[in-house]
Image (cartoon, rainbow, N blue to C red; front, side, top):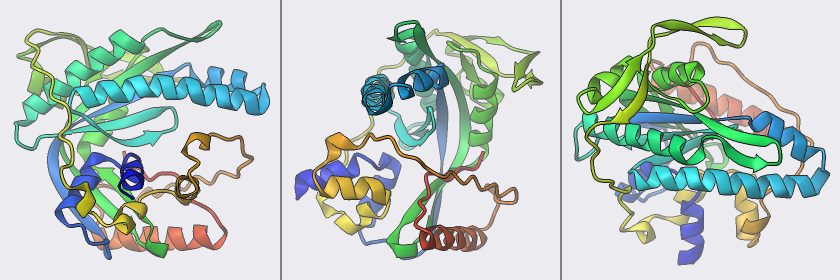
Length: 314
């Protein structure tokens, strides 16, 4: 049972596990809590071309693509963990990580994220993924006050959502970054500038065929590196009720794990994708209003056997 609980926990961000550790009872109503943090978003450049090439080979190609991505993302996740970060969300071919400023000032958390960004580019830039296909990363870093919101509850399924101004910062920085670059928002740069060397970018860059004004700072190096500190492990995972952890794992994954099929999670499926844009749902939206919207969304999707892949506010 302990091994299964650890497997379940590996699919859940540490920031959520620590909340459940503090209150191990199953969640019964929406929850929101905030803290200062550095935020990093890393996006793979070249993934679409790679996925198309492997998809042409059918199921075998999907398995090969899964192994390659596990290897590539595995290194990325290890680097983030070694630098004290917490992966909170995968978004297509990218991921979002947090460095909560808990027990240390925000400028230290931002410096850890900056060091991690450079380590990511040093290790994974121009990565030979297949013959004629190389992968690179675009990295954006922001900092400020974030909130983690737990919404939903239909069929005891809860959706975590990370919101706050730093999410908008990293979105702008990542969109403006070129492959191989680490761009810091002006807010993040102010926190680390004493310890870092960077190049302010006051220019226009093309993004989706449009000119994107860029006022981010390209990180060149860290002048005064700090010692690495991996994310603190959970000391009382056994105190958390299994149902509390299962509430955050998508059903398609949960059932495979319960059947002992964790090695067979990759598959090729025909899917209908529904993208729902909620323009009035922002990090300023009241918790009660957000809960009403997400419960209605869950109810409609589950009625037609759909599943929520991810929620995001940026």
